[in-house]
Every structure is written in C-alpha cells, then in structure tokens.
Image (cartoon, rainbow, N blue to C red; front, top):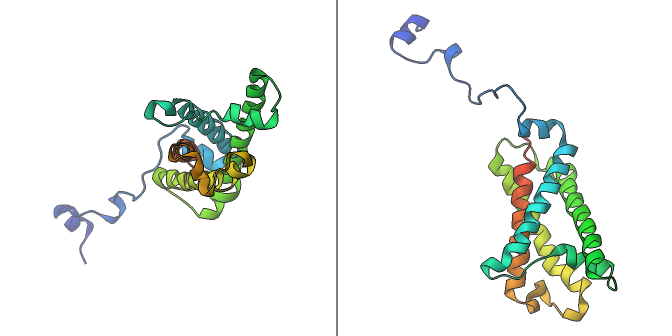
Length: 187
C-alpha cells in the first residue's frame, strides 16, 4: 500500500486533501439559501417580482409585433365592466397582482416541494417554466374562452389569432423565468 509520502512524491491526490465535490458557500447571505429556509417569503418575493417583470413584457409585446397584454385593464373590465377606465385599471391591477402572487405561492409551497430536491438554478428555472407553460395552456384552453364567450375564442383561443396566443405564452414565459430565478432554493 502506498504511503502518503509516495502519493505526494508522485503528485497524486491524497484522500484528505482532495477537493470536495460541492464547494462550501462563502460567508454572507445568499438568496438560494435564504429561500431554502424561508419558502413563504421567497414565494412572495418571487411572485411579486415575476408578476411585475411579466407585466412590463406584456406592455412591450407590440415592439415585436404581438398584441399588448394589459392584464390590469383586462381583469378590471371583467370585475367592473361599467366603471370608468382609471378605477377599472386600479381594481384590475390589485386583482391581477393578488392572482400572480397566489399562483407563485401555490407553486412555491404546494407544487415545488413535491418535485424533489434540486441543486441548480437551471433546474429551478426549468421547473418555473413548466409551471408557466401549464398556466399559459390553461389560459388559452379554458380561461379566455369561458370569460369571454362573445369572442368565440375557439379551441386554445385560436380564433383570436396566433399572435394573441403567442403573446399569452410569451407573457407566461417571462413570468415563469422570473419565478424560477427568484424562487431558487437549493437544498
């Protein structure tokens, strides 16, 4: 059996000097470790940030040839159909913000724990994107057609145009990417 001196002389790694597979975190507060210990706060922050990032993307979609998605006005028109535009927008914005945070908390506290442990940001982002694509599909398949029967949206809302359906998916992709980056616990 080789001695420690033989291994060192041949420049082979010595068992107690081998580098660990996972490096220890440096001192200080790191968001993934914080979220790992405080899932509720992590879900609230992720939901708030993801919703507002996605809302900005929704307003900017005309820049790439897609329709503007203003969910605050959209929800306000459902909740207060006879109100003036400004109170309608504020009511819709409050409801929309509440919705986005509730969906993020549902993901963070109910769905994410059932998906098993994760060690990478990429896997957390992938999980967030999967959640967003499920919500986008439900929006096009069920929510839009049932909330606006007069539009005759059709299957997957295709009667409203491919650009609207694509816009809904792009909006949810922005939401889900932000959700995955912000809700990034690493067990």
